Amino acid sequence: MLTLTELCQELQISRSTFYDWRQKGRAPRCIKLPNGDLRIRRGDLNNWLDDREDRD
Image (tube, rainbow, N blue to C red; front, side, top):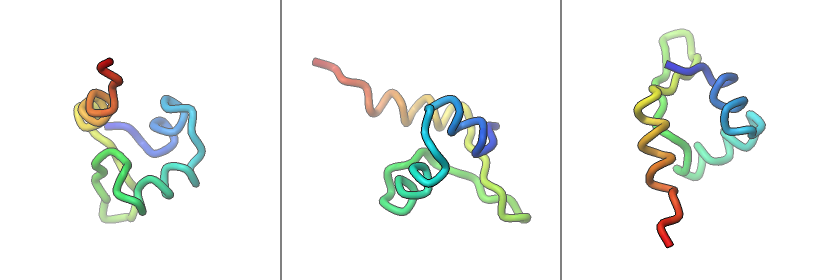
């Protein structure tokens, strides 16, 4: 699983962009841990990226 920092680095976005996407329901699925930290499964990220692929 990816941490929020790792996800943001991989997508080259800021944390504020991620939280904006999340608020609008446009971010990849997340798991909220008991301590409040977020984790993103690699598979969920890959599926999310596949859904956004331009298929022209």
